[in-house]
Length: 81
Figure: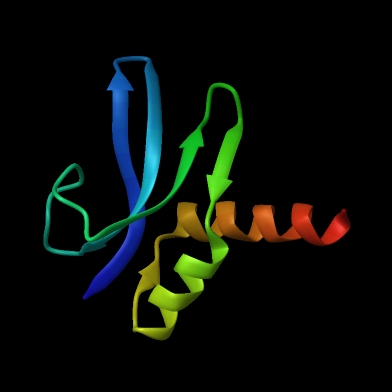
């Protein structure tokens, strides 16, 4: 099953994440099929390609709860502008 989830980068206590499409049986930091975004919890910087995520969802991918929260947050911010 294809999942869209976070891939951890950075170092201890200063982590940042890439939002990736990856097989659910692979490791958290395994090779991703496609990178669809970036999230830094320290600076609250988020960059998400909504069109790529929607394309992967149409192909059957599922979002993890954290990624689902980030995507909803980004779509609300974009619609309020």
